[in-house]
Length: 167
Image (tube, rainbow, N blue to C red; front, top):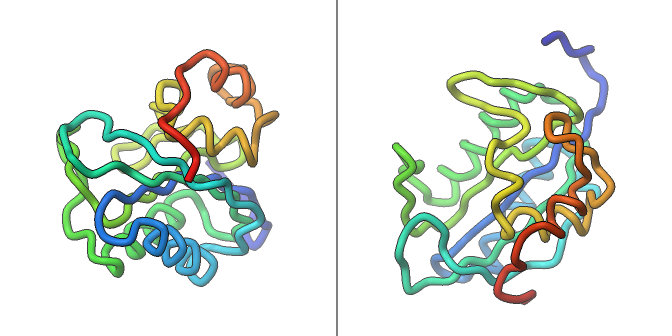
């Protein structure tokens, strides 16, 4: 994959928090995204959702944002990992074992790039099955065409059960 240097590109990020002041955590993450990745063009509402893939008494607050960036997909991933560490997340989920977290930032879409590496898969491989991703993402990119599934985000969203509620 060869990308033209210095050209601004759109990247969509998914955000989640279920520890501490979840709203403040998402707001802080968005501030760091502006600082480290690029201009945040749009942010969805915050959604209250149940944990997926693990048991917890703590509900999540989830959102999505659209960012205009000059970074490559791998550089965006590195920046999101830096933000997570800066905000206090020491351990990423391993072997699909999820845990409570102060912040989680996923790279969902980067233009129409399709990438399958050990560190980064684009589009995110679970977009179509996760209401906590699709509903916020549909607010800011409803007509975006998934480059592999060839359906819009709205079409994918309409095929699943909605999350708990909007905060």
